[in-house]
Image (cartoon, rainbow, N blue to C red; front, top):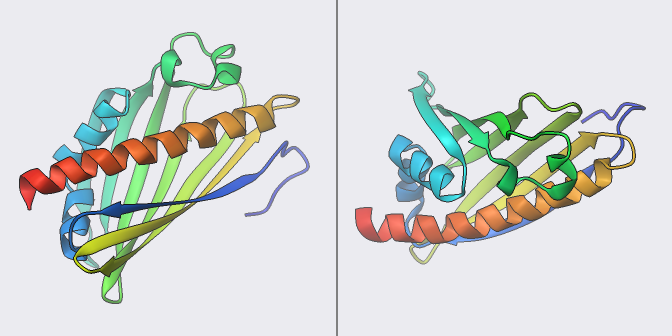
Length: 176
C-alpha cells in the first residue's frame, strides 16, 4: 500500500482463530449467505443484506451491505456520525492450491474522513480443525484523531473476530 502525505496513521495487526471443522467445511460455511447474515447480525450490525456470486474460477464473492450503529463505533468516530454508518463488506473466497484464501475489504460510507480497512486470511487444517491467520490493515486519514480511531477500529475488529469464533463453533456443531 502506498501512503500519501495526508495519511495520518497506518496500523497493521495479525489475528488468529480456530474453527472446529475441516478446511472444506470452513470454506463452505464462510461462503454461506445465512452464516454471513447470522455472524454480522450477532456482531451488532443492522440492516444486513448479503448477496453471493461465484465466478468460473470458483471464487466466491460475498457483498454485505450493513449499518454500523453508533453504539458499535469507536467513541472518537461517534462525534462525526450521529446516526451510524452504512458500510459494504466484500469478502472474496479464492481457491488456492489445496485450500483457499479470503480477502476482505470494508468500505465505510458517509464519514467526513477517509478510511482503508482490509484483511487477508490464510487457512490451514490440522487434526480436523482449521486455523485461520488474519492480517488486518487499517488506515484513517483524520488529523489529530486518526491514530485514535485506528486503534479503536482494530480493537473492535479483534472483538468481532473472537465473537465470530464462537458463532462459527456453534454453526459447525449445528451443520457438520
